[in-house]
Amino acid sequence: MKTGTNRWLIVLGTIITQIGLGTIYTWSLFNQPLADAYGWSASSVAITFSITSFALAVATLFGGKLQDKLGIKKLVIFAGILLGAGLILSSFATSLWLIYLLAGVVVGFANGIAYITTLSNVIKWFPEKKGLISGISVGAFGTGSLVFKYINQALLSSAGVQSTFLIWGIAAIILICGGAFFLKDAILPQETTNGAATKDFSIKEMLHTKQAYILFVIFLTACMSGLYLIGIVKDAGMELAGLSAATAANAVAVVAICNTTGRVVLGALSDKVERLYLVAAGLLVTAGAVGVLSMVELSTTLFFVCVAAIAFFFGGNITVFPAIVADYFGLRNQSKNYGVIYQGFGIGALGGSFIASLLGGFQPTFVAIAVLCVISFFLAVTVRSPQQPVAAKKNNERRHSRPVPSQQH
Image 1 (cartoon, rainbow, N blue to C red):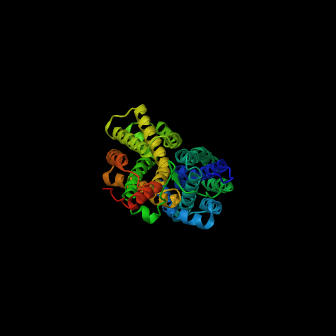
Image 2 (image 1 turned 135 degrees about the vertical axis):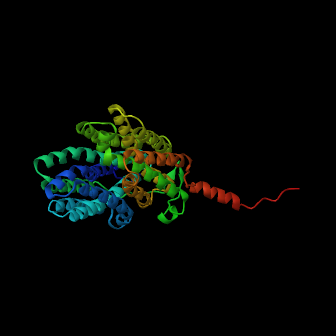
Image 3 (image 1 turned 90 degrees about the vertical axis):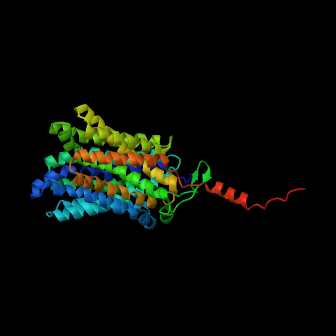
């Protein structure tokens, strides 16, 4: 892509922005402090993050359209200010419903529109390295959650929950808006795959293919397994493996590290091998890991190995999927199309908890997730791209439209 723009500055801006966006994954640190400060139950406060995740997923449906109107830089600056304002105003909230609205709906919506557009935009700048660039971008999101886990934890201990919200909000604005100044909308040439032009599907066209629904099911399953584990990993360690609270808490750090590592490693690897085969391998490993967690007597080591495997492939799978959507449906409308598929994230965030409440307990829930992973594994190894290179299609049309030469007698 010869545009006179240094593409790596776009990557830098995306990384800074994604670090700011990833800070929302520290929410679990706030559950107990808010409960203690206002007399709410910790479980009621924890609902906030489910609301945030759902609002994030819904917002991705609007990100592409808003980018078309505002441009990537203005949109991300707007999202950064909105997200920061939601956190800053949360420092003054004394009602749980206000926390749900500000830290849940507002922060989630702002995060979603910035996440989907910056990720899709940077992938468009590197059509030849979609997997690697997706891995770097989404890995930065994971890095933000890991770094701010320690920052927010220290602030909560020293400054209290209200001041932490205030400082966190200001830091998020600086990071997201600061990264936005390096961003620039991608100018796409005709999309090519192996030198042949390919079709750019609109949302309507994509939804007329069976592949869109198959990818949605696979993505939902991949998200559900990881998101459910993230929410209950400490409690599961204590109940299933008999770990102490201090030892089980280390699983949170293991999840964060392996999640981030999986994003970068599988993202880069997906440029060299078939992307959906990587997803299929991840689903198979995840099915085995949750099967072990539900059926085997766990040692400390075995528990942490299973947790690490699930987190690694969860991070990797959600990184590879933006590139898969681009491969299947073209780059030009990637943010809009991926926004539709990304609804599997929001449903997956709620689905694990719903299955757990329906079946009761960690073990039957893990069994159900294992079954879904096996089903999605077979879908992933059998689905094929709807793309037919336009050049090849035109050649076929020309061949069939040629008049048949008369035979010589």
